[in-house]
Image (tube, rainbow, N blue to C red; front, top):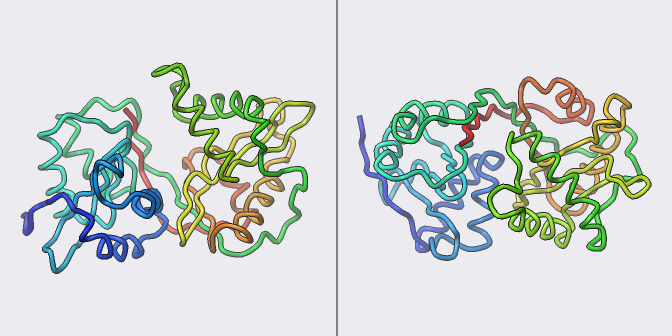
Length: 279
């Protein structure tokens, strides 16, 4: 079944890889951001980029670092990546990408890497490229550096609720706190703050020249059901489209019906389906 070996790609193949990532810009956004910032040299990129296909015709890539992300991986590429990876110890905390590739990859890796803590097989991938046609909440704004201690508890609550484990477990939260700090410093963290408490938050977790990917959307439990999320998300979209990137994208669990309604009202359209395997 395999027609080409998998190999680790290096900086000399950067342009070829970037052209390939452009063919699936929403799925590959996180990989594209890392390569744009640090290239393909593994000691700088904090991960490896594996390629499937001949040197003249690269067909698919797979990012292996904190996450495992296949891009444009058909059945043959999935089989080739799995054959290589099954002989290695798992270092990633999740597998995420287009649903067909992720679920096929997990079928082949489960025996070596399992069990998974959770498998989310149906996560609609959404994108928008037009300013919201609905009112925006003017109280949603970029978080200031002095407000880190306000945002951090909300970020921890969001992560714990969404992922199912606390980001404070591994190192007491030092790494996660650095990430939240970086989001604030780069102008990519948004919040609505009332009486010194965050009631809505979101962040542009990934930014490329093609898209700004929103993650970490959260409404404080006592504010849910009051209808604040739609106008708040519209404010994030407006700022991101006018200041950061030509499109805004995100993915959402299929069972999160309230969130999907919010995104629909904000003008998002479905551009694919992702899946995530969590360890």
